[in-house]
Length: 484
Image 1 (cartoon, one colour):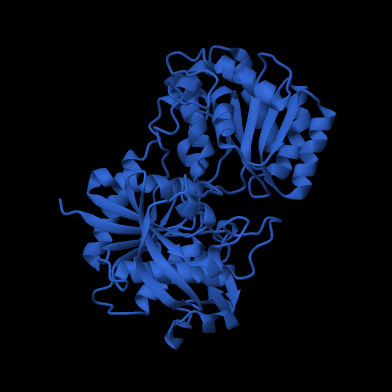
Image 2 (cartoon, rainbow, N blue to C red):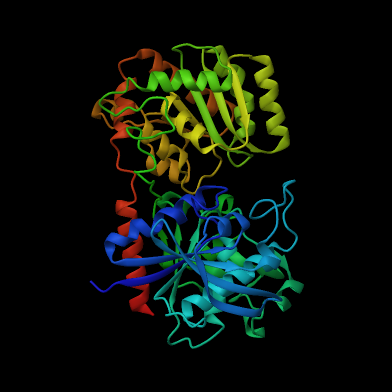
């Protein structure tokens, strides 16, 4: 099998920089596709934390001006795999996060920052930096959405690499006003509905969807949902028009990173055949969140505290959850009103509801390893990873029937229970009645004793690794390269 070279351009990548699931996917893909004859190189913006983590790096290309600022491309290795970094201090050398300052306000130049990143990705993929060109450019989300445009409108179309555009979340599209186009170093022909123009401005995700050779979403269910107005966020017509290029490939998880038998973040390891270690982890969660100790159901939530994630509905059902004997531990950050509502709930129910604002990776592992059930009431969820971690750790997912959640969790209905296939609880709609009923059903299953362990074990024995997904991505890369 001929080895294929792929450049993966993403604005974040675990463990170097992370704000969400995109980082986990970008970090896991190289190992996932390697067994299938694909050599993947990751390309990242040069945030301070990324540069600091790479003590040995070398300059392979310099820009006197990349969309208005000096820049260079650095080559390094991280965890044994090749990595390229765009070192553009004018765009990325600043305190705060990848997209916002320390106060949570979006950087005003986000459009230009990530347009520069996308242009550099296209230059690398096409061999315009002096390095060997790549066979395929894989662009992730709006931050890399202009990369296919820079391939299409710059250079020889007969020899350009093939490109894939992956939608991790259609809600984030990267739209900027018409004046922004003049700063992109794209030819006038790119300003069209077949190019980067979208509702009188520049649509970065839209550009990628129009111009890439293939489009993927992170679950088959989401690939179907975004054809409808309630999920397509204004781009549903474009999605339907390019349905022949659309592929739903569910995310996987890193089975080495998320392995309860060997996870150093846990108070006690355990396996599907011996779940006894989960008790010690449950006690550790209770201590960490100031909860009373007990054997009753402990629900956990690990998420961004936003409307999309259904956290406003969670606020409405907390009293119901506690009234049925449940307890709740929440780890996350987001909307100030939701954070305040959670603190108020903890005040009403001291020792029954605990809140940690922020994100803590080891604590997230512990919560999966000791929580009885993880609540994921998302209004839409392209794939979701927390439910996959829950399955792997015997933390039963209670999820909305949407997107990747519905693709990866099997509801504990009577038929599935009788077949030994049930792995969680699914519900709809995402409102008080829907979530409250799901919590009530979960507590009944937990209290019944005998049915609960088989649900945990079925989830833990589910293969949610990158094996099949890695093969699907590799096959897609080869397909579009041949078509190019």
